Image (cartoon, rainbow, N blue to C red; front, side):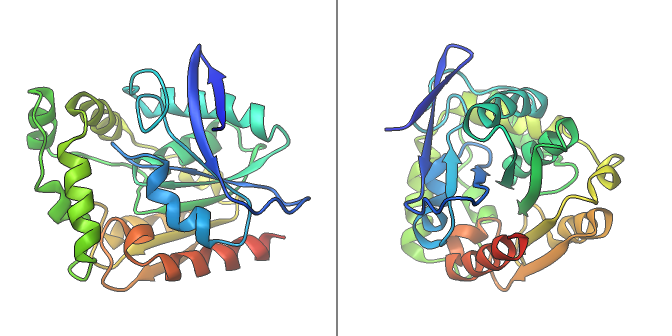
Length: 252
């Protein structure tokens, strides 16, 4: 299993079978409480070299979940220096999108393109959610907010099980990091980086208006996934994969 040791912690990552030489890889970063498994359809279905990481304290990676987007971005910057020091494409979902934007602000020379899925320039979190996780409890109803009305029942059932078995500490740290994140005043600095934005039309957690704002400020492409919710890459992987392949091949 592939691991990198960063800050004395083993960080796990999965990669696609596509090893075509000469292509800049796409690094995918999951959202709050997630893991590389949220990208399995992309790892297996996109004909392009992909790397999907488990952030510290998530999935198979060691350590504790961090409590700021800044800290996650610093760690991912070290990760990139190890696996693709000449530059990389980065995609992120929700909190992963926030990390992607912060990475691009920190090292625009390394981030050659961005894929932003179900995310925003800021990610405010309801106090009820933070209070619930701070008290050591989970919030299963978040699954109802995360998936669209046409999401596969098997998918939502598995997600519900994953959610209730998750660590409230990890969720608290991640959602607290999202709540403090805000780069809306700096987005125009990134408009020279090729970017595609993806959002489900039924996304309740980061509604399409968040993506429309990113499109405007970043001069990006915007792709709306009909009837998908916040987890569009799981709910409608075929459409998301097509968008990714077209974007990546266009970059050359």
